Length: 265
Image (cartoon, rainbow, N blue to C red; front, side):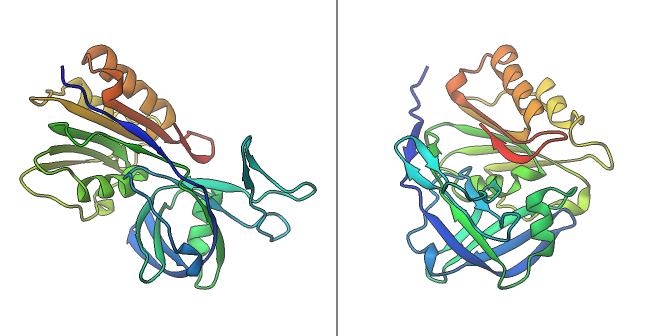
């Protein structure tokens, strides 16, 4: 069995005050908010599934962000911390000082509500990324499995696919209109799975793919991002039924049913 060296790259965390520059409607279920400002200088996000922490105004309309200490983040005493959520940077441009963030428009969560109402000039603070999971670039195939919340990371995965590698991609979306343009060539195979009104938390479209899955030749890395319980169960299936080494799998819960919008590594 080949040795593939995945590694964790730590970063010095910087908190950046930014402003909304413009918005774009990517699909019926997703809105892109481009934020920017001089504070974006030096920003980097080397891994496709990095996440930054977005800080929103607190109940007093203020931004209260932590400072990093050896014991971890610490908020000023006597002030209400700004609520925060984790999101994947879709792209950034240091020449124009722009950062694109894609929001799934569902329910009345903090982040999706903010994105739905975002207007040029609105303030937001961005922290991180704190660390990057750098997956080895010498696997033969990368299997990417995710729902609509995983689309920003999947897009980045495919844009940075290692030379000579293949990608098998399975994306669960609400309906056909939520498909997005993705890099696609003879190395990349994308399957769009449409729920068509079925509940995202209890759907089994991605799990059904794994039940009938034929493993590619060579060494394969599996990346999963979906509702927390579903992502956890798919990882267990890949380890237990397909016999894949645990270091060849990365599974992340991007959200919880009836819970908050977050990344649950």
